[in-house]
Image (cartoon, rainbow over all chains, first blue to last red):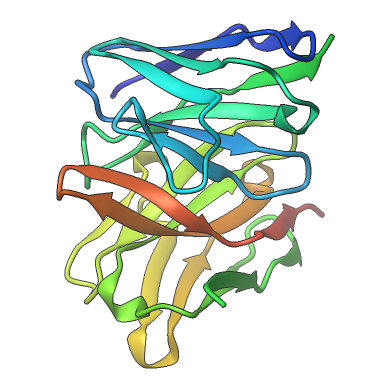
Length: 109
Length: 122
């Protein structure tokens, strides 16, 4: 079973600054990685798939990178509306199972 | 409007059963693999089960096999989750999600419902 580990658990960033979130897989998942954003009281929202492709309607300040076991979600200039928990998820074993990371809570400093 | 709406959650005693429903609208439900994802209070997301468009393929998280059963009725544009032998560890918001794909090599949950809360407590 693949284990997805996200760091840090909580990240505090000032408005307009860059936020860098990490996701590590216990074994290679190639580029089979997705990022979701979940705001309080809401359902998750798709941000990135294929490790680096933005979903429709996602602002360009969100970018994803990485392959294999190390992945990064970068928000180039943090906006107040970006406050949320961010989850990575692998689909390397599609369709048999999916594994989420435990999430990174992004706060405004 | 393209949407998923879950229902059927509530308070159930340990050992009890509950059936969740997910009503789809605004898209061709019968063309999509559908999935249940749950989220315990204050915790992260956990994949529960997925079912292919015609129901030919069904997958469950290993920890849930034998207690949970997913089904669908394409004529009613609905997905279901029958949950038996419930325990406090099953307390969570249960989300219904649509599996989308790109180029037949990327799969992701592109549409989510708002979720329904299941509380298992005596």
